Length: 124
Image 1 (cartoon, rainbow, N blue to C red):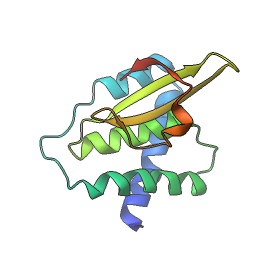
Image 2 (cartoon, one colour; image 1 turned 90 degrees about the horizontal axis):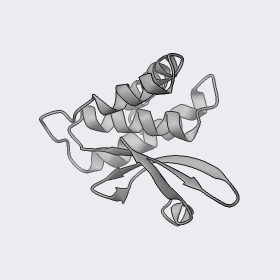
Image 3 (spheres, helix red, strand yellow; image 1 turned 180 degrees about the vertical axis):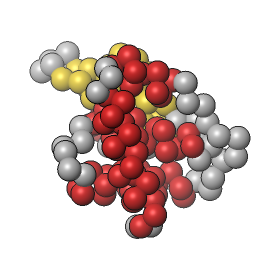
């Protein structure tokens, strides 16, 4: 675990929390208007970013739900040049919703088996 990346993940969770206070539309705008940086970091960075956000949720002062974690991962990956996509899905029965992050159609921030029952509602 890289300490600096963990601190950045904590900061990103806080930023996402503050954006969320302005509403769902503001959260959507914060993700959709952020384009990937010109340079692309090494592929190992993806795993480091996802792990850092997961570890940061342990130290975060509030419970970070899947949407907040996914927004943080998406923004951090895009900042590093990866074209990350935040996906929001739902399960009809029993009704549930969930958010996760994909890179080129491959889930990077969740267990894929867990997502088999979810239908995609939106992609940012």
